Image (cartoon, rainbow, N blue to C red; front, side, top):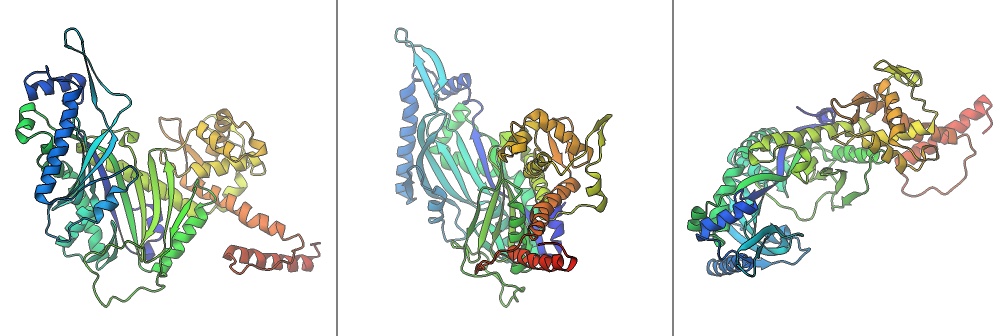
Length: 550
């Protein structure tokens, strides 16, 4: 089901499609991850734990590094050792094979990163093990990133630690899975990075992306099993040692990205929509920075006539058209809005740590996790649309200052003449995109950021009192079975409209009563300033006509 933002601009769209983007899975051995299980696994591997010590654990990492170097030299696989700060995925892109039929390992990157390593303490007298514990803080140890081309998922990365218990991460991209399925279906497209920017049949691609994403969810464990034992872990444990010791991986979701892509019919409309979205959202939401990467072309005003079909794939390093990005951060979540190519607007929800969702993270529950991420994106886009397109009913404005009821309690009205109420209203709008809502203490913290004289030492108790007023007017609702609040859609539109009218309409009109000062006009004047200047001139004529001193 589409959100209100997509529905509002549906007349200007060719199609929309949702897709799971970057996926990061944690791979771990349930047996070897616990202290007792690790000792049992060692006994199954070696037959005894007499040689279990810190030196023998480090020896695994050395043997693994030698085997990897020997294999890379024999099979002519590039191996690169990176330092801290180097962007490894950009290095890997330079080595991706040009042959579309290639599958298998094409690059190995070595680097250091923190990971769990066991520390073995033995008695000096008896030589027996006295304690096994994980080192704290986690030491930096050698990791190897195996870059592989999979026939279904394209470019995948498996990052493996050389020390037991050989923890690993698998990095995949759902767009590459959809790309391969689209080629099988005969969809012709142009691809920029991980986004389809020029499509011969956009609606067909939308159907392929929807069905392919559902299939991909069930194939995550399969692609991991296909490569991690035979291509990666084999350098530390041979297949016979893996079977003898009972070493098997389990997979859980660590990070995920979910995107909604809006394909506009005309690039000029996309520019107008997105620039308006940024301009309207900037005053109300906590956007620290808007980043624009300038291209060397302007988006066309009319729909381009297609004389030739797009190429199957094209990866563009420098953007042809301007690409603007703004981000909203909510703890472990980030929602990004940005433009791609000639006519694509993308909204992307990024989950930095799956623990924040408070749900099961094993790969079997990936559909449930993605559904929650989709709901987060829907909620944020609903809030952004309310801020972008706001209005207030005729009767609602007059009724705000009158008393109301919350349950059986009678509460005061929302008096917009008070600076404190206006500041609280602005803080509620600022917190509106947060998918989890906000508490009274979070509202108090947001109000104190404004540094208003009327809101000094604004506490959670005062915030709770003011929230009852807003709840009485149905501007804010309480989330069921929690102490968190969210503005209603109608209430959010009304609050944004009130603040916009006061700050950007009423104040400038009242300022027009003063005698305008003659100044040199700037060469590049913002359209809003141009309208303000015209209003000022018209108001001066009006005041002269009705006899009001100006």
